[in-house]
Image (cartoon, rainbow, N blue to C red; front, side, top):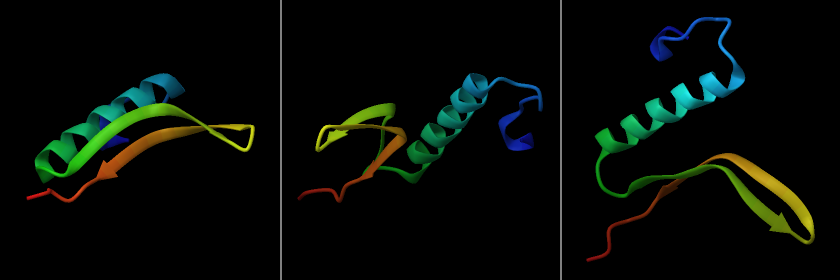
Length: 63
């Protein structure tokens, strides 16, 4: 948890927030083509409900 600069007694929400910030920063460093789409993204498949904790995307640049 050192890389997140967070205490071991932090809440799950705080841990998620720090991780999202860290992931977004890393994606920015990687440059174009990488995207943080969202968190807790809702999907429905055949009537069943699902939530993706983190949704990331890598798309090739179109020329």
